[in-house]
Length: 118
Length: 114
Image 1 (tube, rainbow over the protein chains, first blue to last red):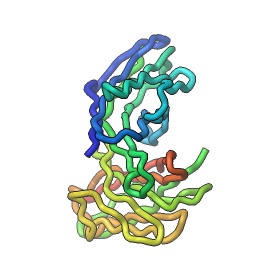
Image 2: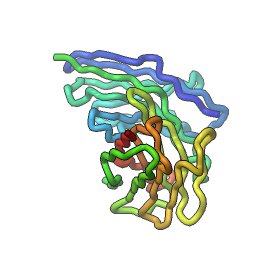
Image 3: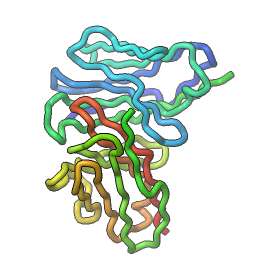
Image 4: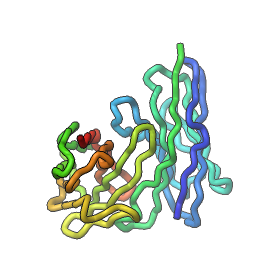
């Protein structure tokens, strides 16, 4: 079974600074997807960024980028120019690439609470 | 972007009663939907995978007779918590699979059982 580990329960960053959230995972599969989701106080899950395991290039979405190290099974999220609205819980998630209903389920890490200070 | 709704957003019920939660994909068809449970300050735990027209697949440890799932159409899945007890109080979140690679989450339903 796949597992996702987030070793930082809480992180804090000053506004306009950069912060990196860590995520490691364990899998025996070679094809999969990795995600970072944001859950603000409203508790609505919002997709931040997605990475396909077969792609060597790290995904980027505006101020958000990842450092995907497949051999090390590491998938960190970097938030640049942090804003107050970035404060939220961030969950790392894994999904198998096998095309069956249950295989498309997401396995989540325990989350990292990000605080953004002035 | 794709929209997934849940109804109700918040429900309080008495112990022993049943509660139905709806999950709808508003602008796309979803053959697969997922039901998660989230306790305070914890992660999302998958309860079951709901497939349109067939029985749901439950995760280990989830009582299928207690958490009834019906996915009767391509845009609607329901989760019924039967004979609810205070320990069932939680935040229930659904997601709908739009493509192989994309899922969209509903806003969640807070269930409080007195």
